[in-house]
Image 1 (cartoon, rainbow, N blue to C red):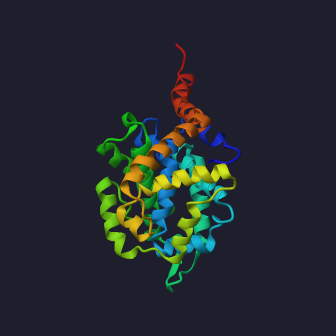
Image 2: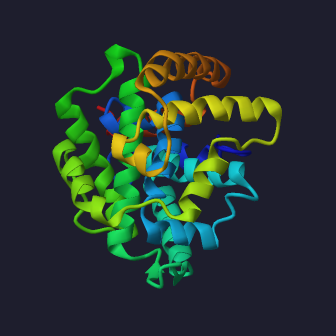
Image 3: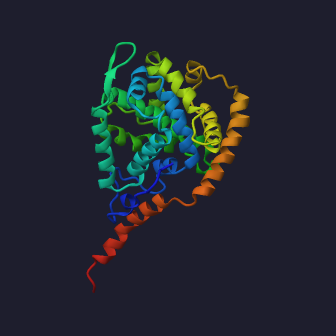
Length: 291
């Protein structure tokens, strides 16, 4: 998922650095972004939901290499999320600055004739909100019940991730569960499935370099269908009965997720980040004058 070198130095130092947004172990964002099954299913759901914005989809369709290298595209997104969540302040600043520079080069004209820019603040708010709503839905569905967030923690999650979007240039970012749902309601008149959106969803539901990858991706993307709103499924032409989504897709995705989690083992990234954060106390002890 992360691809190649984990670059653990981004997470391990400098000792005592709190990270750009002060996120700590046990915080809602740490728990949500640290759960592999929820993030995978939520990530696929986010791509489906984001595709319904014609301008956002035009930018992806005309500039992204997701068809030629979907796994590489996935790796890049995962690296950004893990670095801004678990990384040091310098590492988080570096990846945010990189994405901002990339966004300045992504612009053009959508098929309906409207111009778009990836650094448009309102477009950034849409992409962020659709993404984090999907991540939270994935976590609340696939994390073990004792680890799921309370309503207050769901609000805290949205507050903790908002500064990342604002650092990228988003504005008026929703910061509570209700604000996110009201935002989606307000956006609905602007959302519809373009030809590019429908094509991207078809591609997403069957991508993979090997038969094994296609099987796992198919199971996870089918499960992600249950995480997007009913109206979004209808707009994308996805007809999957509720009993299939809950009785079949969810069961299979849970089993696949547990297998993936077992295969991944304890997170080296989170361990490095915990060591960096714990270093604040260690550094304080080292700097204390002896008596």
